[in-house]
Length: 284
Length: 284
Image 1 (cartoon, rainbow over the protein chains, first blue to last red):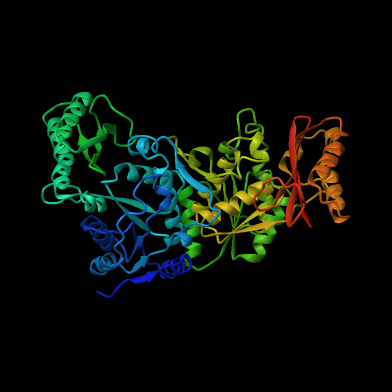
Image 2 (cartoon, each protein chain N blue to C red):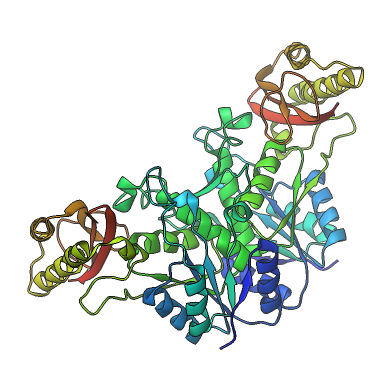
């Protein structure tokens, strides 16, 4: 595989896309914050199958980090990322810096009302506004035919689907399944923060969700009972601190009392200093 | 001139644009709320000169009207509008209805912080959020090369220029000069609301601004003095009620105390029940 072309400016990236679109090529787009792992690779693999050309962006977006969050220590591993993109067959790697992406007087935000204030939005105010804004910017620069997002960030996915619908953005959002370690831990760039002791406890998230899914398969429909059981399981891990345990309607992200239609069991748990999220779809 | 093709759905409009873009045609776009007048025609004329194809949209956008504003009585004159578009040489007329433009669960907004809260934003909360959102939607549907906006809506123009920059929207915003009646009144679809008596008093806006411009040309630099003189002139009209009289920095829309660089003298005045706006650029 040839190395992907690395484009660091908006002008270069836009020109690359414009040329591709003039030739009637479809563009598959995988926006990332770098620190790429097998989860990202699965997005690129999927995009590779469905499009003529693949763009991966790497940009640790400051506007989606709150004060005291891990913006500065977020892992930055460009050389390894580039290698993974080469192996996965990406054609272009968009790698702008902060100044390139945000004008010093930048003041425009995309807000997806309601959906952005629940679940992770409760403890991360402004986070999804930052995500919706940067993804809109990236869509306008890259002009992809399809964009690929993992279901691990279920709320992000739902917000972006809603944004694309509401703003008529000319792109298809493609949801992709969560990639897990053999023992069940959902892949995340933040797993790199975990000590061996924490890594073991982090398994609690996927185990708890699997337990919930099985309870629903066996007929349990009471959301409060399911949530209570999940919280209890998580609290068995000594370094786990629950941010939220929720069961919501998959479309509206509103809490449900009874499992019906497509629901989502979603968790955010701090293991030591590392905040992890995971979720599973429940169908009843 | 052949009649422009009238497209009522997003799918049709997007397909029309996609076809044009595949042929490498440039698209000039004039978004309007209909009730077209010579001001709109000047935008279409300008677009005609600079692009291969012209799209005019007509959509009275509900999200930019506040409670108690004139959404329901806003003039709707489709047949005359279509005729004007034909004469001006538009190729396509995008004429969606409300249901086509807004999903019933629509909840996404584009917010241009700061700029949207001053001047007209003070008495029309939510107005510019509605404008920025619908223009973003229209840009995504029509995918224009260039979009044409009149300087009469100076704050709208500045907000949209900022939005396009901040969100990297792939379109060039082209500001166009205000078109006036021979006696100076700025053209507006809302002029249709004026009685003959009010029409005479409405002249106060342009006269006042012209007076301000001349005072600056003669050397006056004190914004408060200029504003005071403008307010006094406007108050001579018996049915005039001032919403605001302001002199602002043309880029930031912030009040200035001294005229320096490019400034804007801007007015909003109610003549009877009709709210009119006008402005003039001041260069010192």
